[in-house]
Length: 319
Ligand code: TXA
Ligand code: MG
Image (cartoon, rainbow, N blue to C red; front, side):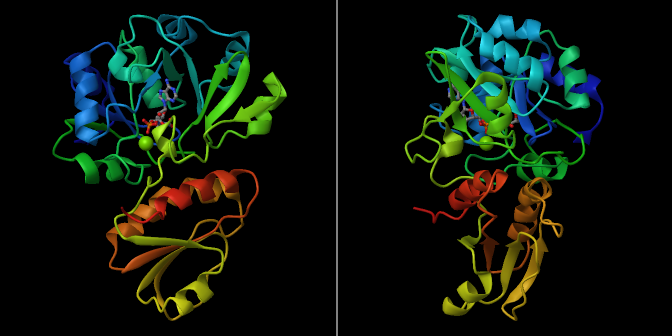
């Protein structure tokens, strides 16, 4: 059920069961990070391959020391500046962190989410929460409690209602390799803000098909409907003779009789607003009666690059 009652969520988590939690990025499917039954339940509910490690969500910097065996100076600076917030850091793990969480790696991904309700819940627990996005593996991430309910209504006793996610795109993931800051997944946190604090960062595997992080997987964030990405929607519809099309446009409405439904993500052309609205628009058109979804390419700058990368994965054809 959908509720704002964190006592209920706490009780369910204390029993080793799962709860959906709101964060500023996307909703997470959360369980006790120190309970292997809960961790296994996350993988099986999501149908997620066991070689895809999970993110540990903490409430305070003291918890970071319980999770990570070494915290580089640069990581401390970044934590102080950006936490709570949409930054995940990959650090050497403490032995207490299960290999199930890290997929056998000796590193663990950690972040402090920026959502009052979830921070209040974490404050009532004496363990951190592991939480991947609360969607079946490969499908569109949830940015509202309703999206989670649509996926897991039967399986979850508690979906915490925290409103629509303020950022709406997954966190930026970075790691430290020989004191170099390495970016594994692009998010909404601008890389120049990270660089201003810790110097140049290196992108690694960010566009790789054989990824270190599964958010990097070829087909991901994907609607069930056939989906396409193009920078010239009208022309694309004509040359491909597509009809009854759902369009997700960036700034301006596209006029074409072939379009039956259209969502304009940001009439003012703001990348942040468009990103926040993206997954919601994808859910909406995927559940509508259109035959296919056509995405307009985002502008090729800043956050637009992150989003285009996700749109490429979302529109990769099924194998
Ligand atoms: O914004 C977010 O990060 C959301 C919310 C719920 O916090 N969570 C999220 O989790 O996106 P998930 O499981 O969908 O993606 C976690 C990513 C995966 O791509 C995984 O490979 C990467 O984190 N990851 C986890 N542990 C890692 C590690 N030790 N090394 C490298 N990547 C890691
Ligand atoms: Mg995910």
